[in-house]
Length: 101
Image (cartoon, rainbow, N blue to C red; front, side, top):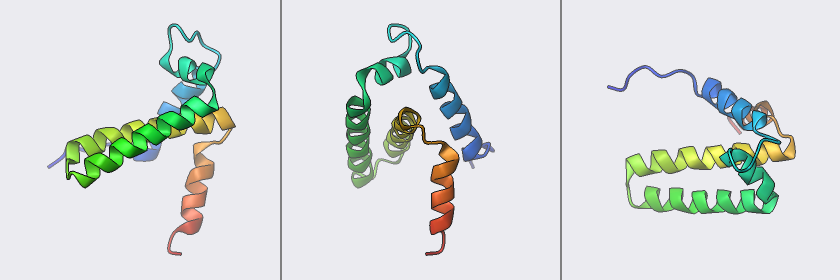
C-alpha cells in the first residue's frame, strides 16, 4: 500500500509557481532559467525527448521508469506553459470540458 499522497493539482501548482519564480533568474544558477534562456524551441525539443522516453519506458513495461519519465514530461510541459503564459488551470479546465466526451 502506498503512503497517502497529497492532491496532484496541489503539487502541480507548487511546481508551476517555482517555475514562474525562475523566469528572469540567472541561467548559471537555475536550470529553469537556463531552459527559458534557451528559447521555446529548446523547451519544445525537451518535451519531445521526455515524451519519447516515457513511451519507451511504458512499452517496456517498466513502471518505475514510466513514473519518473512522466514526471519529467509534466515538468517540461509546465515550463512551456509558463513560457507561453498558459496557467495550469486553463489546461485543467480544458480537460474538465472534455470529461465524458
